[in-house]
Image (tube, rainbow, N blue to C red; front, top):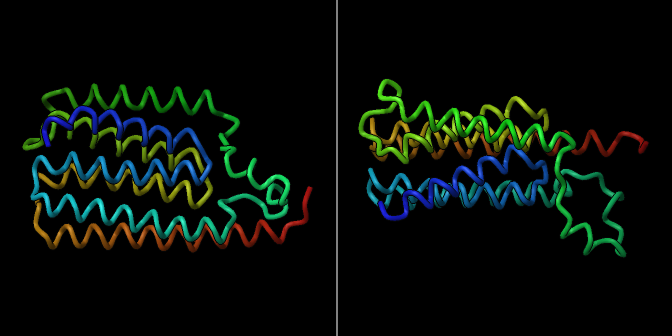
Length: 213
């Protein structure tokens, strides 16, 4: 898998940055599942391929939970605003971005640069990890924390937390690659996904009760 390390790293940086930039659940779900698969491809360099497959499957199931929640919560949008039959196709293909898009973009780029610089320093590089995994772990942790700091919406915050957990998994894989730890981390991912979905549905229900305008 080493020949795919650099493309996987680039893809992870793009998807993690996209989670910071956009607040459209549909686009975020697609970025998150790709991020899980690319993380599994990277981690396959230092663990058994079966472990990498399990991590990819965990990501697919987590995004499946989010997708079911998104369908029930109209993907975070108020019902009746853009679900009219005459506008259904347009609302499906239109993606939403936050008003602070330039700031978010610059913040994501600066975070990636800082993470790459930190990972390249001998005193901060994690022993036993290839350079690509060092950069990916630092970047995922930093971008996950950045996403948590920039949003108060449960679904986007949950995806930021999962991004940070992916960075932790990359770091910890070289220390303890046992199946028990893999199972524990998978349970943590599912726990975050379930809690995030529950809070997102609560927020959506509360928003729907508010009078329009």
